[in-house]
Length: 118
Length: 441
Image (cartoon, rainbow over the protein chains, first blue to last red):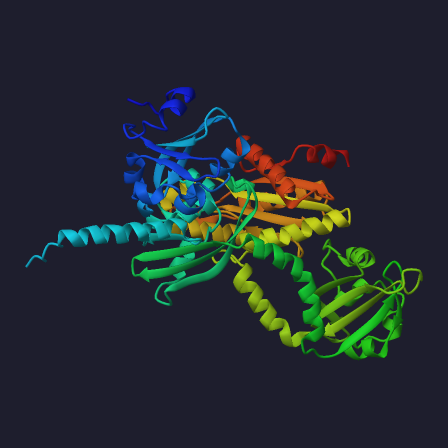
């Protein structure tokens, strides 16, 4: 079972393949911010289907609420990233508090945003 | 009778439709908030809101839109109440400003429209207009110039001044417009054209000469004095006439704009005033404050900002309800306004926070103004449900000569205000460094 707080290296290794068993939302993006991983937990949380989300630009087409200095900008600013922030999603049009963990490493082609509803 | 259950095939179609609608609302470039009235509880909110005002959403405790926008739209609830029974439109395209003080990484201007969706629903739409506002700021002076040239006006006049602004030539046109003859005016500083000032009031005439010398011209509008008649509303342009000549360095052109005054004032009051207290609103404070800061920087003058935060306001609101809270805000703003000199600029910039902007004012002057304001709030009791009681305030001052920016002054004043609160409220604190300067002088 995957843990939200597991070490970055093990998450970056496991998540590209094994994300549907996670008890939290997992979004994986490539260097151009296109969605490559979107797990079922996150799809249920956001009310969006996995199929419609894959391949889209995360910050412009899927979740513009994260397109600001608090999330999107961090991925631009740092190649190595492991930070947790409190955030509010407007999932299904209602405000919902979540904890985000932002992960990036030069060793991994994908960057991840983990979403833990509060 | 129960309705027929929806056929399964239709449920699939409905789900798809719902998902595409949701997808649309996620990416719509307009922030939408739907809330319940009178509580203000937010029922629906889209992603754009989070994108534009994330720091406010994260700092938000509670579920009411009035709490969410407490700092940037402090008079939202009053505006909603005032519009009741009149119109579904509460307001349209109100400018709202947020910056680092609200946790934003850069200055942001939003345009907000509020509309009732029925007796118990309110819809807010937010768009980011930062780029437009910045362009407008650049154009404002230029358009005032064009407006003064093309708008139908009455009489006009010119006169010539020396390098210090003393009138050296007075024309027949000037006599016709003002009634003053050359004998009245030649040899006097041109500031007499704008009539007597209250004792201690700021005289901008020197600044205007500096701007004209640096930029070629300076435009302003206001009252122009006339002999044995009421003053007339006029646009005046001070221009660099012949800077090599000691006694004809500047020229002044004034045009009678009295026909336009009412329209101008009306436009001003509807877009720049806080609806509850009648003081200037937050959006106008940042526009005007920025302009003042630039002016003070260019002319090496002091800019003083006094932040005023009412003490224990939350307790008053919690104990007596927001109707009494509103009365307290009106009382406090009226007391402050009575104590201020003519050119001081009073604005409500947050729930219970006011600012006073005083141009060309040293730290010690700013402190004595703040002290006077503090005392008058302490002395003038406010009628509360369980009897009259003084509502005091804490004051933070920053006073900077040729300030870097409005932002820098505000941050310093904010730290001083925090200190005043920390030291036990109902007191005046100066920002670091300003204290030493105030005593050293």
